[in-house]
Length: 265
Image (cartoon, rainbow, N blue to C red; front, top):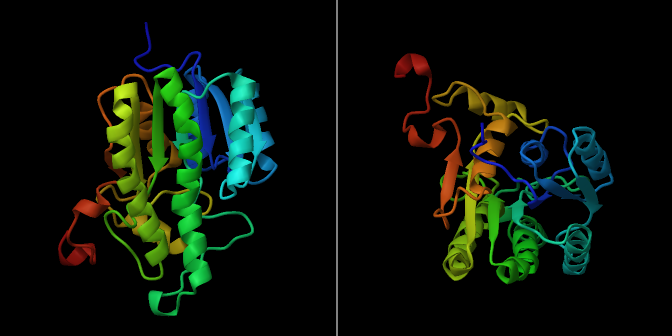
């Protein structure tokens, strides 16, 4: 029986795929199982372990180490991916939020330093711009492409204390995507955003886990559940969907009441 979605002969580039339990690598594994040729990028050498795991599954895969906030490194690594694979058909912009050796800053806005603001905007918005700006011309030349940005419900829909810069960046990614969507659709390039809520990755905190328990679904989501949405939007079948934002949060953002269940629901 033919598979509904497949990625045979498609080159799929996933950024921020170093964590073996993260959304990026979960996405890569699904794309690999569906026949994709996989290029992975992260900031540390552990990306080579992730690529080896995919090769052990029978996939063609290669890992690359680069700081995607550095435009020189972005240019070099994307050129190398194209030299190695010959194309980039799918781009999943998952990198952002946290970086090894660079803890998140949850300082409230009135006390936020300019340096912290700039770093968060660079990591969560400009990084996505850097990679997309480099890849998009190649997609336009081949007149095909799928770009999926991993944004967040934090910023576009809700927010938290100490997350002004992160919220601003993640909301801006969606605004940027809408402009790109209008410009690129004529070249059969679709760009969309996936907005995870409380997801049970290895980096999830105790408070984030508790937040997941209070969703309508009664639990945090798995990285695979987010990856499934990314994979569909990255497929040829998502051919008339562009500039959109898809929330994957177990219904958390649709509920008005978030107090104790014994007092309401």
